[in-house]
Picture 1 (cartoon, rainbow, N blue to C red):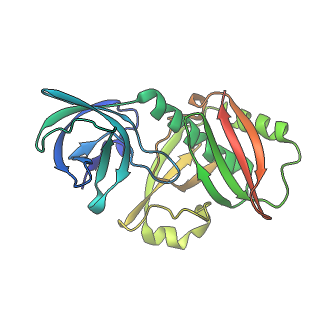
Picture 2: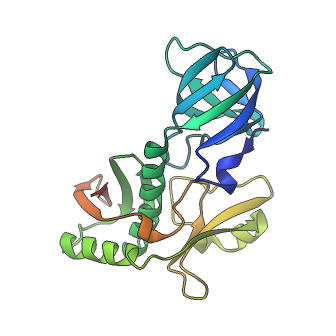
Length: 238
């Protein structure tokens, strides 16, 4: 299993590591990593690996077998030897935008209190799909409400519950299309706002900013019809 440093410190931009395995497909598995593996609508991280005598660009990171994270090099990249000690560095600007976007989507699910049927996070544009028969009556008012909530600079924290506790509290799950990360005996919850006045609490394995004020200004883009009972709300960082 890869030690996932991004789970305990999503602001870690550089860290040492050791090559545990090179996969048959040319993926790189480290003993520990700061690279987030694609999942939950959030893209895998990009960046670089540097070791004595070589350096390679990482295009993305994916989940591997047995709890590993597989770093996928860019095309024709040089691979480090197994057992090599190296330094891993994130494309921090891209990751930080994903963190801001991911936290913003949690807030969007607060001001649109409907079941979420899908979602995707990007550095430039993100979106949530809702079980929504009719479009919002006033998109500008929705945008104002979203920015006002972000501007409250609410703390974003994490806590853990057991799989059984999650099963006993199905209302914590907002997403209809993506199952919460479970099966390891415990589930990570992300809370926005202090108890007992939190505005959001839901299972999530992604990376987030420390406070909602770090998100910055947001713009709601197109609201698209995706089926009779589905609407897609696009979100942009300003």
